[in-house]
Amino acid sequence: MNKIVNIIKPTGMTSHDVVSVVRKILNTKKVGHTGTLDPDASGVLPICIGKATKVSELILNKDKSYICELTLGITTDTYDSSGEILERVDNFSFTKEEIEKAFDTQRGHIDQLPPMYSALKVNGKRMCDLVRSGRADEINLKTRPVYIKELNILSIRDNKIMFYVKCSKGTYVRSICYDVGKVLGCGGHMSFLLRT
Image 1: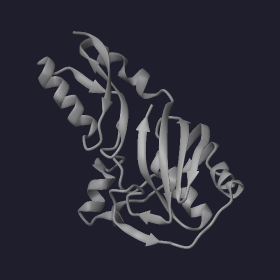
Image 2: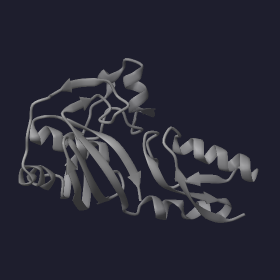
Image 3: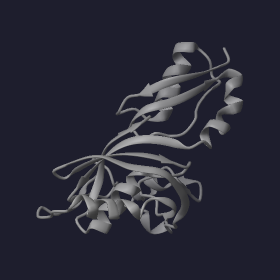
């Protein structure tokens, strides 16, 4: 079988978990995904099967789009709701214009600092594994150029902001949430992510 199958990954599974399930169901080894989705994220995960794995790089390098929820006032070490809370700010209030200004800092070509808890590799080891094993001092975090093509606020309710983002390969939506919270001075984390 040589196909690309569009799978909606549920939360709680890694992208590799999905690949393993597809391998078992189809009884084939030649299966690959086209871009990692965090275990806490859900949504579109194209899976390449057989000879279709040869085109996975083409899909991997394409722009991705997401619907995300940013929760203001709570900062976590992973930049999402699965992490340990580092800081909580209860008293804050922003106008829509102030929130838009903070989002403006994330639009276009930007230099983004990825989260320490990510699958990026340092000397062949994933950063998240180094941090969890107490070896965070081996990591020299550097910004990476990314392109945020579209970034639109969909709704603002209390301390929750839903937004749509279309971005280049290598963009961490968690970092967008963290950085917006930092600009606003109250902190923030990603509390929901759906790749569309």
